Length: 218
Image 1 (cartoon, rainbow, N blue to C red):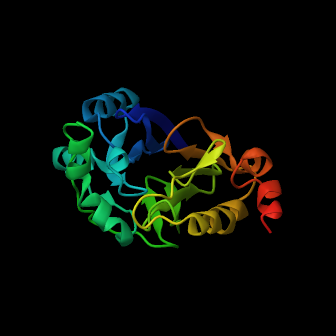
Image 2 (image 1 turned 135 degrees about the vertical axis):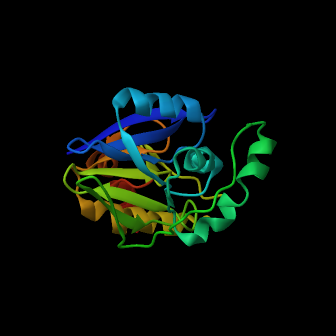
Image 3 (image 1 turned 30 degrees about the vertical axis):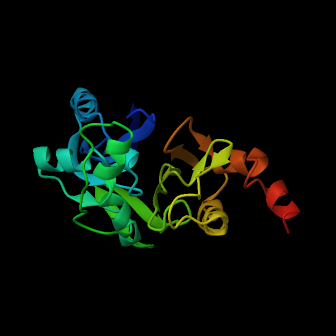
């Protein structure tokens, strides 16, 4: 069975997820944005054997620690979609503007695309390309546990910003309604920031993508 532990990192309190197979203890880090020592201490405490680094998108608070962890453990960086390469290439520039030391640019070993599958231990994650917040954003979904790691696509009560370069509101709304909602109301999601929620709860009350709001928009 898939297990997960959320560890907030960076000044933006980004939810990095340590995920692992409880049968083999092989696992991965989803969006290690920074605070590498803190993350690795938690990995050691849990007894997880890291096999890969997974990125939902290229923003610094999600990807800034990936290069350091890759070097320490010789792990592959998987994802996001190649359309986010320009974000990964600017991590150090953007981190300097915020005075955030230690965050580094990185180049994935494998780019992801819609329909790909990621495995570790006996666990599988389906890949959904979900642009809008960034053009190369992906969501990682485990069908067995009905859990999705959604990065900054959707939050409890909100959705991702679209005022960044190559962001687009309608594209994001389409990604949520066409890619995420069909997974089922019972799916729990781990957002890039803030508390967990379910797709069903957001369809009921989210101010941006609830069924009522979208119906009113036509």
